[in-house]
Structures are given as C-alpha cells and as structure tokens.
Length: 69
Image (cartoon, rainbow, N blue to C red; front, top):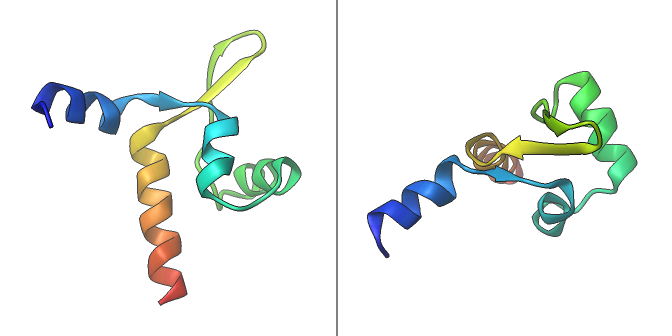
C-alpha cells in the first residue's frame, strides 16, 4: 500500500456508524462508555457532527483484543 494512504488511514477521523461496525456495542452503550472513560472522547466537527480519532479507535480495538485473551 502507498505509505501516504496508510498514514492517512491511521491518523484520520471516523464516525460512530463506522466504529459500531467493528466494535459490537449499541449507541447508548458507546456513549455511556465515552462518559465513563472506557471509550475515547469524541471530536466535534460541527454543531451536529461528531467523530473520533482513528488512532484512538485503533488503540481501543487493540486493548479490547488484549482483554479477550
């Protein structure tokens, strides 16, 4: 893969609908986890647009995988 594209994928932003495709929780559970600190804080892109940093989601996935064994 082109290094520039790989870099973009690891440092971009991702919306909740895409996160929930890989982390099997519901929206309410996700937001409760954000509130308690289990899941990363969001980034506001506009009044009604929220996203997360890809690198934080990748770290979360790695952590969840390690917890599973």
